[in-house]
Length: 175
Image 1: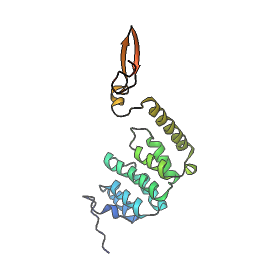
Image 2: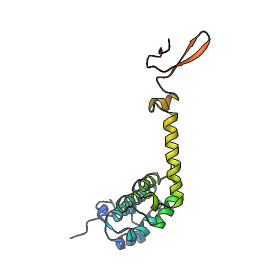
Image 3: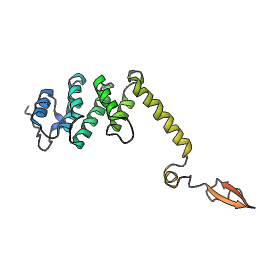
Image 4: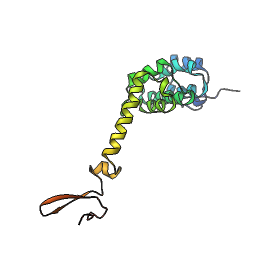
């Protein structure tokens, strides 16, 4: 079988199954190393792919670094676990909503058993669960209510100088 990957265009790199080839391309300074990291996550054992994924998450090109974090999430999906080095990469990138690693963290939280997570990520699970529950209670209408700042079916009416809140769709439920 002939190897048909093109480092210049990235074509065929999702089929990369040779960690040595990735190392050689890294030394040459090839493009599309993040894409090739996804291929390693798909086709190699986690122990072989992990050091390359760690290096790929530190690439200077933002797009390729994003693909490298996609590869970390893919490794979590396929293996149900990550190596300690990959957990440290996720921690260093930051698990927040605006982090480049947000999808990789979400995949890790979804596909790795809770008891196998490191302590800092277990706390993240608790934080996200509580935050989501509070947002659900605070913003019951969702969608437009988030934009308007209140539920769309909640209107204020005045009667005899007293403000009353109506909870019906027509806005006249109490009258």
